[in-house]
Length: 296
Ligand SMILES: NC(=O)c1ccc[n+]([C@@H]2O[C@H](COP(=O)([O-])OP(=O)(O)OC[C@H]3O[C@@H](n4cnc5c(N)ncnc54)[C@H](OP(=O)(O)O)[C@@H]3O)[C@@H](O)[C@H]2O)c1
Image (tube, rainbow, N blue to C red; front, side, top):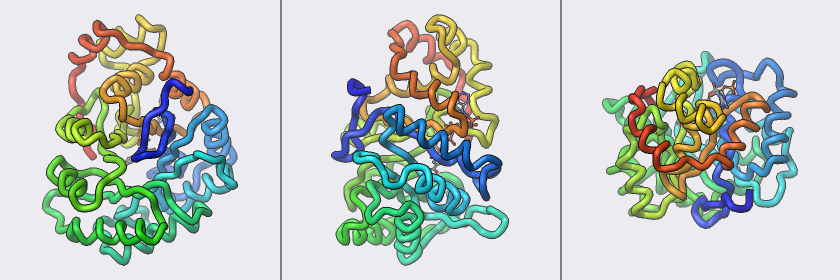
């Protein structure tokens, strides 16, 4: 995959990484039915050249980070582990947003411990302004300040931001400098285009989550149902999911994919997207895809 390298901050990474959220049990809570199969997906990903894994201690909680450590530690050189902080889970699996500075620091420590590393390559601050604009969140300055202190202490290299609008991204760039923006974006939901533009303008990596439409809302079924996606898939002899991922890669050379899957077959299919070259006719047709936002 040597032709397909981009950058996370100043770190070279392949353009297709792996999103590990699908490795937890249903609702991203508790263990998966088959932990051996989950570890096999992780090992196969690295074997195929994946060097960017996106995770979170709150996936499980702990379950996904434990699987990553069990499957891959000691980690191969150059493997970039990226996590996110800003939420916790209660006993029922409900997501509790809005972490204060001390909580964020504790969450970074939990990630370091469960992944078995001394330093994270990147930590995303997950905000909740898009999930619930009425919610009072801790001040952005304080949250990013806490992560910047950990960066100074050598606990993390890069700070990222997740689930935020253009105005907040601008502030984050000014406050601490950022290594990535991780927001929901796909061919079915292009509402984040202003943030993608901002990333292009500032030369910041853009990492779309829900690139296939999200397992929470039926996964890639809506892609296959779209006549334009299906037509391009037929033309190239590939799947609708592969077209959706190839379309994303064509949007920006610092867009990094982290498609999530619990299946080796889907993993291999997703990585094969690097070989698909969409032409201008394909992109024009794909512009006509009817938006079906999946939420954040
Ligand atoms: N920052 C945030 O707030 C946030 C939120 C959500 C996710 N994320 C990150 O983003 C990553 C990607 O998001 P995601 O996993 O939710 O959504 P996604 O990648 O859009 O879709 C995952 C769904 O697609 C299926 N799938 C994957 N590859 C497929 C293929 N080739 N053919 C058919 N189905 C396929 C998966 O099922 P199978 O398991 O059956 O393949 C799963 O149902 C996550 O893993 C996580 O690391 C971040």
